[in-house]
Amino acid sequence: MKKIMFLFVHLQLLLVNSLSPKHPSAKPAAEINVMGFVYCDVCSNNSFSKHSYFMSGVEVRIDCRLKSASSTTNEMISFSANRTTNEFGLYKVAITSLDSVDVDSLATSCQASLVGRRGSSDSSCNVPGYRSTTDQVVFKSKRSNLCIYGFNGLNFRPFKRNLALCGKN
Image (cartoon, rainbow, N blue to C red; front, top):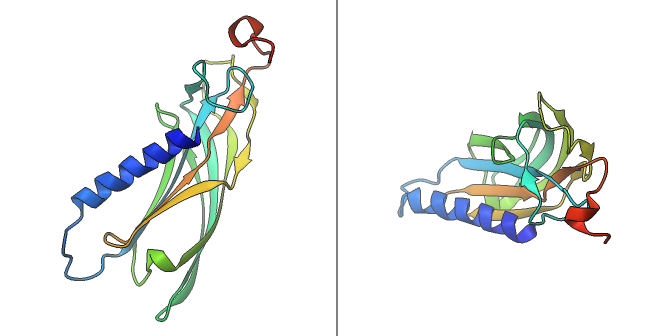
């Protein structure tokens, strides 16, 4: 699961860097992206298996405190946001145009938590598994002044484990 998240965030970072100007005249305003995904842990083993699938329509709460400390500024940015996962199980908060913030100087404390499911017809995967996480992978780009925080996956699981599908372990 960490490999999936690493590849996903890394590909997004490469895409953003390829679209960035090669020689910017001035340092761009900082951009911070906080993202993660929610999946159904069909086998209830806290990992993304071949039977797992990403879940859309799940509401997630993101709480972050970002501290920028450099020679020119010392600021604290706090935010909370609720986001609903898309068809790929992804939720994302983007904070753009942070003037005078250098992503290299950011210290962060973020948490993502399951809030609930909205209008889902899938009742087979409705017991919260991993309800919250602070574990994250961080990618920073000096050139584009971009910082991406990718959370480990949150999940739901079935009320009863399917032994025929998942085995006894």
